[in-house]
Length: 343
Image (cartoon, rainbow, N blue to C red; front, side, top):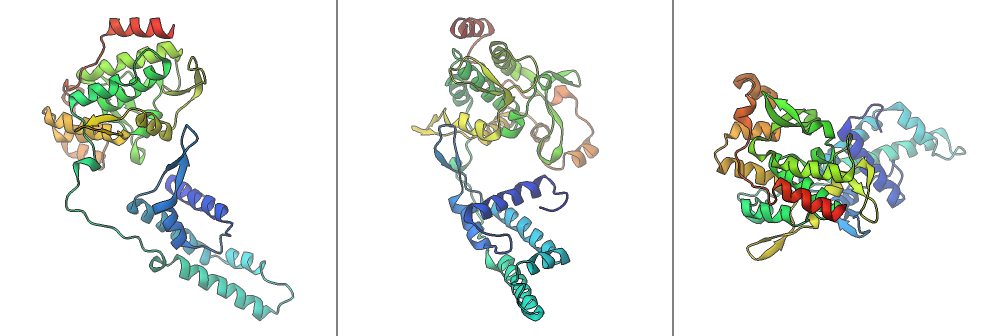
């Protein structure tokens, strides 16, 4: 690791170091071609059922990982400390010229192996993207999805609350996992809003709920039944399903939760990804007449600060989404269902 790695460097180099360890390889003996193939085709994770689940990366992401690794090797090959460490690997009984030749060979092999030509990544340019690649649910499909977990168990109530806040605000999986109780009721221009403490690129933003503030009904029911008054909103549930853990959930847990509730689309059951809910928010907001710039601000997409310099800070009322989804329960029935079943 470099002395002060940024977040991306730490993550990508951590991946690489773990892979080296799993392969029994030393840092001075890289094989970026094999590492590329691992990221593209072989990487997996263990899901909450203890099963191996594919966790392959996209070609664009693999290119970013390899670029970071190559950059670090470039720094190492320019360091005298690296040469000193390699000299320690030489046989002390060899002559100085033989030791130097060995170190030079190590350097040459490292430089050859990390050269971009040694592990190219093929990118396919797509003119069109099939609808199946990026799902955008219709309002009736959203209703079916958020009904699926039910609200009669603690787990079902948590999963319903999670999915409703994601589809009603367009937040990312990582942003949902990081939500804390005091993020739920902030104000933007007087409008009740959700606070995203740190979005992509380290940006904080506020997202007005508008008429979609009904998602708070499910979150409040979840917090009440789980006994959560502060800290992380969404948490793991202990075995037995009657109590929650102190720590918040992670991004992979959000993915696992979504995998439990496939939706019927054109007669086939489809797994909904967290990012599909983000696309669903954006598409439906646009279809219901919301301005593209306001959608972009709510989603926290790039060039937010630059764009706001030109247009100024928008009033919260102008940025809240239209009433494009409706809750499958009313407040009284939700209270009766959760109180009777969980209590």
